[in-house]
Image (cartoon, rainbow, N blue to C red; front, side):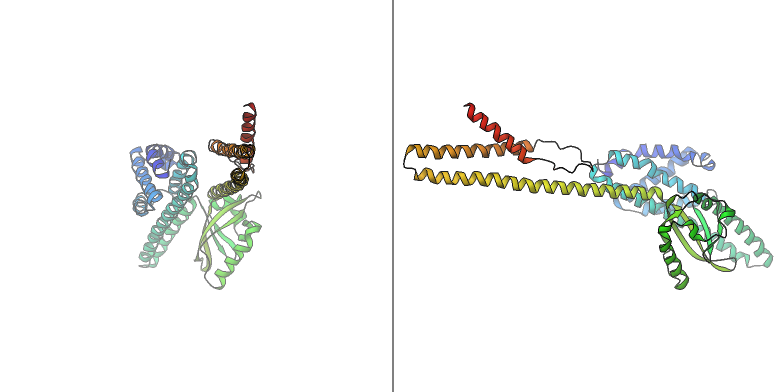
Length: 389
């Protein structure tokens, strides 16, 4: 089954499973009417279909704008991100089970690209509207000192509540040390807030990623230009090293230059990518074995057919030049013998076309078909048949 047929066939099942899982994400989602969830999930499913099959992102962009208007100020960003992620949770097992083997790699890659675009696009749109709200508040605060102080405090409280609600880690670093972190950042590294604040950020980076992050930090502090998004291995308190993705920006925090960033766990995404690359590697190995088998097939056929053809040609010439009936008969007998061998080769080839090869595994390094064995067995059978006559 190809990807388009699969998505069309399982559309209603995907929608049903998605709708059933959303209420379990949070207390707020558990109070959303089923009819509303049915409508938003159906629209999101069709938008994902357009992205996966036609690479059409317009439906998803329209849906994100509408959903942001519905959820902003009511739901935490992490809740909506988790709801989007359920699409991959529901569809990935179906992809692995139902897609044609040749479609699995491409299907998983398209699914990851779709989810990455959707979650990043929604997060950016959600954050931009949130920052616009803060910006609008700031402009109004300039009317009077008293109003500015009051509104700024309210805005800061709302912003801190927003930061604490998101599922991803949020941090502010100043001069290489953590100046602020939300609960999610502390939890994903296994520390308390008191243990995080004031520590060098590199304490939370695995040794194999520290050189890369040091270069990025030096580029940002010396040139002002550095990647705003990068992947690295974080180091947890228990020694675990897990894949993380940071999205950072330069800001002013408490009157000084600082770096603010969102730290997201992408371990599952990276494991899926490893699985995809392993499938590619296995496919390449399978092709190599197939080519080796084909090469041996050609060599084997050339050997047997060339020998038979040489003998037949020589005996044909000997038959023409024969001076007696016995000589001619001996030459014709040799020709019949070689013809029988040629027929044995043809029978072996017919048998090869019927052979079902075993399921390919990484441990299987043998050729798919042993043509030499098939030919020798057929020739032996032909000789026994000739003798019995």
